[in-house]
Image 1 (spheres, rainbow, N blue to C red):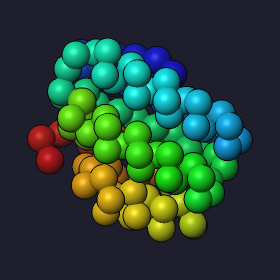
Image 2: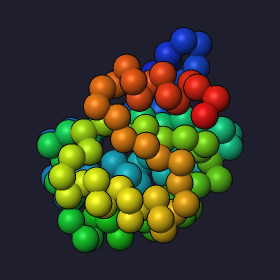
Image 3: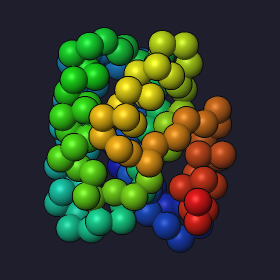
Image 4: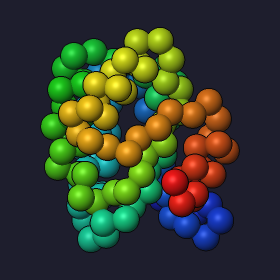
Length: 117
């Protein structure tokens, strides 16, 4: 997990590729701390979940953390949402009321994050 620069904007890149349950939950907690400690309310997040593990425990934790961190970010782009993950993303957005969208490529995700939409 790191801050990356894209067209003079800082994006919090959260790499969950091929991570198992314990790793996903730990990284989600780390991301929460980074967002809160940033002191900003307009952070942009890009998350790659290709090959990441997902289950009810993870979703419950992500929803809990999502409610806590919502005041600290404006948009989130997610890469690698396919199959069941798309249903989980809809549930997350419904509960957290998040501005989170799925993209096929990192480039499209970054461009959306910087757009005014």
